[in-house]
Image (cartoon, rainbow, N blue to C red; front, side, top):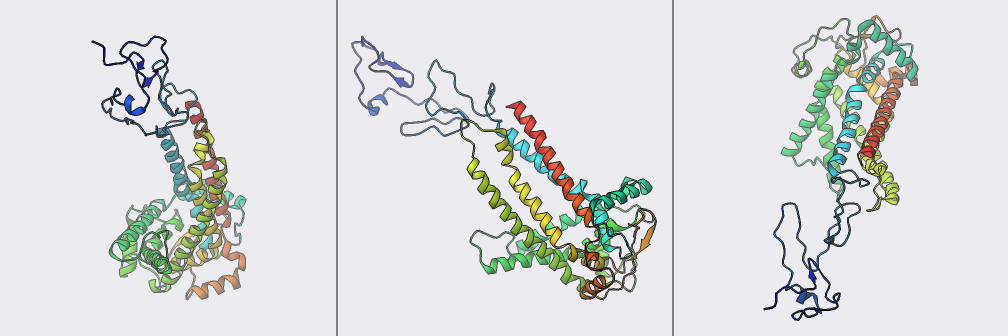
Length: 414
């Protein structure tokens, strides 16, 4: 009785004509259909994919061969597998790198740059100031003086309220988009109606968050010398009190919320439009440049892997910078209107010590623009602009440092 397995059959590869003395029961196989009679599919293994005739091995990672490995050949491990000497880092490490880079950018934007935001807003609302702090050198000197006289806490005041305002803004936008036809995102097949509804949603969100933004602004610019220890939810309490007309006493020069509605919505919508346009333009340019330098499957460089996470961050950075620079005069006017009549006392930004009261008497947005132009000149709209330069310089430095660190770590791992 002859065995059912031909002598020339060896695993998944049939070498039918390779033997000089075929057995008596062996016969040549002329087609794949005949060979399939002898090949059986192995049982499914969790995480694997059994291949059959007509199927190709999916490209799993760099250096994965197209054919199956022989019996005497070691399988080529994919990226990140054990023993991969020159392969690319594993997908988990790649995701960790992207998460770390994004976290560093978020930390820089909201925590490390907060002293720049504090000094920037104090300079904007200080109509007494003779030094406009248009360069980063003078603003750093004032930061050092305030830190020396009041301690580092004075430079991070109001940081918790800024996070609360961001949370209120995101929550309000989500709630409005759920209960109204106003779209939260614009599809690729957009039209003017969708864009109008989307911008209306952004404007309504800023208007609803306006009282809390005003309370957060007061916490940010109020001098640490005269204020008590604020609570975490004081921003919410004072915002609600501003709406109902109760809470902290204000002077008669306090502008009603209806007067603040138009400049607040205008600044928020314009900031969103400018940042969105700049972000898409920068992403388009970066993706077009990167399309010519795509890594091959056999050699994936660590630098190109890191660059996959940076276009979004670079585009967001450029968009925020352009929007802040272009709308800085409008932001100065907006902050002065919000702070008027709130009995706020700020630090003297000329000396770095002492305090000054805010006693403006603007009647509205147009009167504020004309008064600044007449009494402080055109550069009066850019008071504290040096803080913007320091803020985005820190952002660039942290992003670059994070990129270097992760690049070194990934090269060592790979």
